[in-house]
Image (cartoon, rainbow, N blue to C red):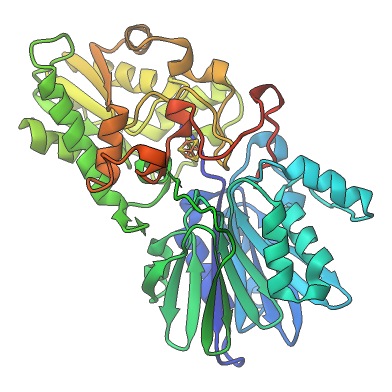
Length: 480
Ligand code: SF4
């Protein structure tokens, strides 16, 4: 089982009102499909009103040619969503649209509000109705409630009240707005098109639609895209960058660059550092002389390449992943999850037979996938299997938009490394250090730990979060 990203947002604004932004948003969502596979939606602004189409499933399933032909507009926002099985419902699919006397707005949100319950209660007490259980609807209702002050004021007032993580793409009349929370926990980037602008969770989707990456939206920044101009405002004086480290480890696509750090290069560096840390342990238990290093597809592969370079261990493919199976965790229940793992990964027997194999994965969460991988490698004749992980042990839950199990189900929280090694039935097990992970993310900033000077959220590894989080007993954060 992996941790899961919960959303991706994408918005396009054309200066020319005759142009249609919907096809580009559709392609953009395809490129963000890895961030959410449960539902997809597009809202488009046309002649002062907003039309939305949302559905359960993958982008290609929801947006048939017939559905796509039903909406058009020179500005549009789209959303892909992942959620836990309990909240899988069309009501929670985004973008959320609110229509009121003064206009309409559509909101696409990636992240989780840590004060959603309080805000929802306040809004309900003032007569606002909700149609979903998603905390993103709190945002749309807050903006709608304040809309008479003008869009910009409504947005800044809304943002003052909400806490947690958010990357927002908001559509209102003929304006596209982007906003990123004061810690910049979730990514959001700005791109340029011929005659238009793009907002995207990841830069890979800007490339995919033929746009040019301009820059990341800064933590605590609001950008308002109108005909011919992009206005930028800082809405918070207390910004402190704390980008989710897991974006680089696993969630984001390797062809994305987030806040100046390329995801592929960070993964290569993580593998090199794992190898270096391995060498530093030379002579101590855990030092491995291996015949082959392999990566668990997809995100473990760059790390395996880096590890091979750093240690001189030959890199090989070893494990093949089915391209046509959904993410493991989508299968509900332990039994079907384990089955899904064996359908998902298979071993190239001839590559591993009789060899001492180092296998590198991006993370271990529940441990079921890792144990299965060790088992299929041994079943294929690997002489030894040494498991390496290019993130530190995940011991704490995430409160900022990533679906994590309860602490008791985080295998590294309830087991020591040696106990976990036994559980996996591996010949050895080692994780990258927290310092090593930081170095992989940004060699320049890694040493600066003062006041979170490294600029990353490491909450699920260290238990230290960039902002206050709800007590775990009541950890029912709404999910975007
Ligand atoms: S707690 Fe972990 S998964 Fe959540 S935002 Fe922080 S680093 Fe990312």
